[in-house]
Image (cartoon, rainbow, N blue to C red; front, side):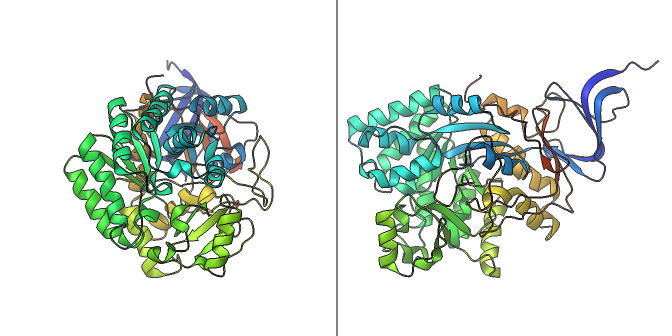
Length: 497
């Protein structure tokens, strides 16, 4: 007589892909209490619910290491793109305790977590500013005062480092270092930040100091600084958005990173499949005098709120003076150009490079963040990467070109980012895999139908093809549609908590 075991859910007959174990077969996945309890034949199970997912891929939910889009409406669009964990690690939070408490009180559809913000620590110490919440708070800080961008004296540096240490103690997953926004701060401070991270056993997540094509302030030099910090301190150094850092120097930068890794340095990377970046127009590297070194003209920038392309240097200077926190699209590379598209893809293909969106929270036309538990309104503004990164990656790199195997592509979306963080946050060792005993953060999708629909003109168009998305065993997407009441996301924090 067969003894049945009860469980909450069986996903039956899907193509189950687990890159870590190499599993890629048609079988079942059983879930109970937010955990995967079995992968394989489910005939001895008695589930409360069975979903027939035949013809679909079942795999670990995607882990986005670089999502500034930490609002419910924005994160719901990420869930429709297969994301089950969205972390704010490059910019970070100025007050991690407050950020975690706010997210927990409001609820989140996916898991969340933060690094501590080096830039906002500097704003606090050098300009007396109260730490803002999220990247829009940082963008506002760019225009409010500029003293935070200067070099710190020894006493000030000690206070900056002290704030970072406090925030790591509060659960930060590392140190987010927006070095490119304060490039004159000096290498000594960066090495001090890296040494602190190494001592506390956390990574740094760096927006490199330089990303120009020409020496002495080149993309190669900017990445070399990160490599040197890893060599000199032993810290785990993570290079953010490889594609928009390396730009046309991707081959040289890739060689440098590969050589450093071959010598045992802990350097990790990420990239996204778009040619345009997005940031505040007041960023130092977008000054009119600097643009030629990036191979850009003022008209390569698009003011998100108005659609304006500055006609010349004088107009760009006025926009930077009057609204330095205004978000702009920066068209570094032309996605319609075969050579430029090849550069984007070479960044995505560097060994052990994770996919990360650099998602930006959606705003109204006046720049007000779309927050709270409400639907995304028509005409919401952001970058298409905020809603389409992972589906675009699967569409272009797997289905259309077969550049990557499905298993390798999924490894870059889930397993790699989990492994980057599991030494800092042991909870991450339970994510990024489809194995018994691991968290039931799962996505079910039809590879033939996965499609990014977001564009630069309509960035809030949701991806399609993801049939079910589960966070901790709870559906946040069911039959391709959001479950509006589902807010099962949990905090991912540093340490053993």
